[in-house]
Length: 303
Image 1 (cartoon, one colour):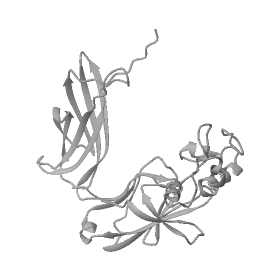
Image 2 (cartoon, helix red, strand yellow):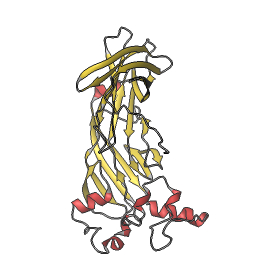
Image 3 (cartoon, helix red, strand yellow):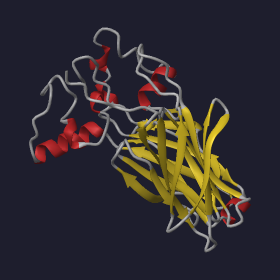
Image 4 (cartoon, one colour):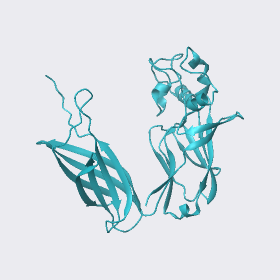
């Protein structure tokens, strides 16, 4: 069975080179913490944004301690899962460097079973200045970018980060950093689902759904999966499939589906697609993933 230990909540935030330490909420970011702790004025008021550019030019460190029950380390896999780090992060566990990241938009995972210990552990995530990084890259090779010097905070094309942080015609310059999505420990012994895709094909007033899933499998035992589609709490389609080479593929048929329509053109009913990873006997549930989907077609009208 897959278990998750949430590492969100209260962390400690500190500007590199500054002794002041602030309580920070995770998920969250530097600007949000500074505002919540009344360390900065409203960046949207008048020209306050110009007085706060130092935030994006600084390096920041998030830190916290957490407890690891002894039994947790008996699991076959113990992963640190970071669903969103913004952006140039260096992660340390118990004083040792674990990894570095450079993409705000992806999930990062690392096996940390040998890095953790029963009882008290410490995690530290340092975020280096995205502005300093992009300016350094710009000095190495010039790229044209929107706004130019004096309007945008840096040549943001050099980094996989939310581009409007660097200033836009409709928004202020506010280059932030932080743990902006959930962070957790994930443990399992047999397998876990890692991805889920739902494809739909409409014809004759019905829809064929193809549900594809991927699994990370540790056990040598055969595994199966149960796939169900529900609407308003009622199951409308169900099937079972085998896990082959870490993959699941199942087809389901829904007659007279309730279609999803754009706003002001109709209702937006959503179906729940659930994939349950099962043991060889089909009785023990190992992991579950769900998606909410709207059943709809897309047609280009060129009249």
